[in-house]
Image (cartoon, rainbow, N blue to C red):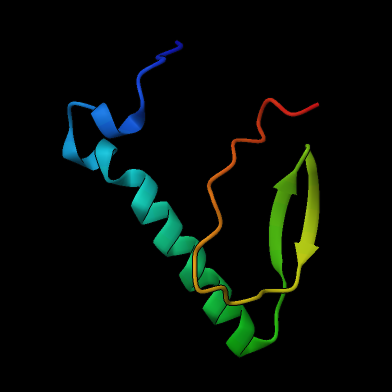
Length: 69
């Protein structure tokens, strides 16, 4: 199922606000990882990668890498 509409135009509030919630959760995961000295596991181009957390003033843009080569 392919819907070309932006998520911000979704009919349900849960779906409309899900992207912001994911960004907040990612930021919180970085904070906890920094406090505990652990890495964050990220899937990039189909490969699991361990990343050392950094706290940035602006959360990174959400990138859909599911269709990356």
